[in-house]
Image (tube, rainbow, N blue to C red; front, side, top):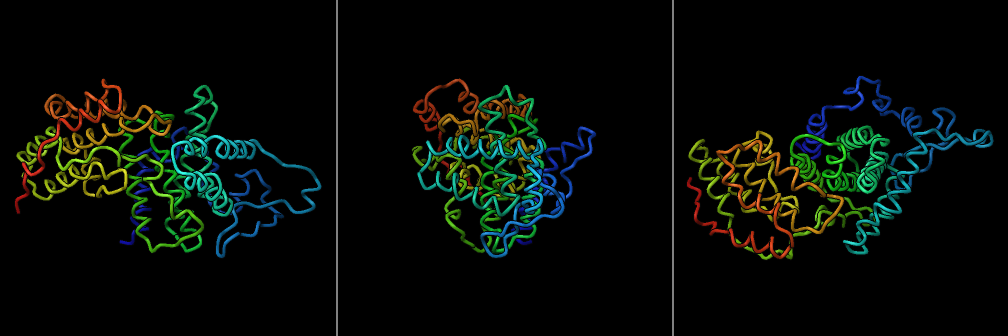
Length: 378
């Protein structure tokens, strides 16, 4: 199956995990369902008829919106509530959201976020939808008293739906924008789940988006501007300065062996062992779809490994992007595992009670065993 089709299916699965359209869940008629140009113009707050399209900046790119004709301009402005909210979110993104990353990452990445992505967003509405969602989530995180007035569910559903449509019809003209939108959606995944009070494991949703982005990046490289330099590793933070080790935490080793004794499935055993040895690489999208499926099935050993990966986020600098993630998902994992498997996640649970990056790193390194103590037999 083509990588683009796989990525589209993963986005559809994620949308389903959110329960579909939030409008349908509330029993309301959704004005965001149609994706034709007329509906887009109405959604953006512009008149749907007698419009002059903006010329795209790159060959083959569709214009994002439309501008009124000369006669309509003379008649006066036509700013609807949705139009003004979009403008406000774009302003917030440019002034505050992109700047929140600029303090943590290189000037090159900051330039892409502030200039390159907004430029592309004016040509590709699915990227604009993602940027507006990211800005709204950031506003909700930094000013939580505004959350009740922000239609985050609507913006989230729209961003997922339009990106899925774009992935299903990728071309040279929109490849860079698809890549940018997929990176931003995955980056803001934890914060979106937090402000939406999404039940279940936030890590699962993030891993789904990360897997989809990885499949998109496996497409033939099409470079446009500097967006090819924007990767998941650029925005998630990096574990590269954490001391290296070839070992696996003892709790994972014992959980894998317990799982093997129960299921006697060599294929799953290999998947679990591989995931355990790649924990530090997950921030760079190395997780395999087989392990992600075991997580979705709530296989206890997979959840144990996930708990240890979760502990690594405590090593990253404080950020609105993953604030509250460790404590929330650890509580969910403990609840799903039950007493029988809880002894295997002693170390991750200890992370919740230890402050300081140096102390956390020492804890994790002290709990490593030689990974060769478990072998895979054919």
